[in-house]
Length: 253
Image 1 (cartoon, one colour):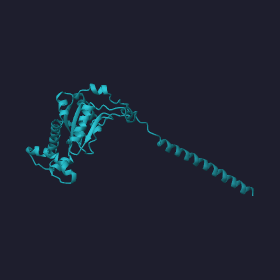
Image 2 (cartoon, one colour):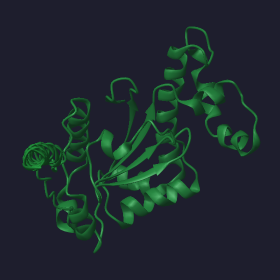
Image 3 (tube, one colour):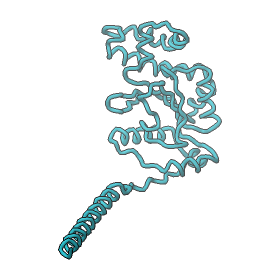
Image 4 (cartoon, helix red, strand yellow):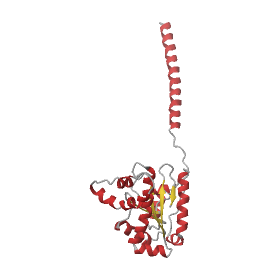
């Protein structure tokens, strides 16, 4: 009987020690997992100040152009500015004093603010497939420049534009037909292009896209006496540019 009790006691002791060892090991594993899930330290975002009315008024159109070029260079080099967007939203809530109005194509591959490394309150952005102007966009531009003080209008075309290709192919579909009619003049103006005039020819598509940017600038000055007068006085500049989808580079025309 004593021998049985002795063996039973030995077994209990062995089980106890093994149990403690496993608990310690499990605790170490749990601790390691917890450490691996610890939040990663992130760099502190910059608290970029939203432009004030006085700062906007002091800007010159050429200065704004240079800032857009500098911002695009940072975008191309993957060194865009870190921003505290929450702070900027709050700061911009009392008013807006953007530097420029950008007319871009609808294309989702052209993220305008990122392309120029600009933040909340920096830019007015209008979008329409084919980056043409109508009275709504012209009215928006007049508001942006004459009322809100922007110093620049930039018409931004881009590589491999679907609207340009559709206009070249004379696509007919719903309201797209009427929309493309506003791009078609640029196709006609490109009739002197030396080469295959086809949507399959990238060089021709690029030629028409750049012609369309310049044609849009002509229409802005033709159809908006307000913006033309501001441009003639040097209060604003109206310029064009072309975005390379592959590199992210913006080429000013």
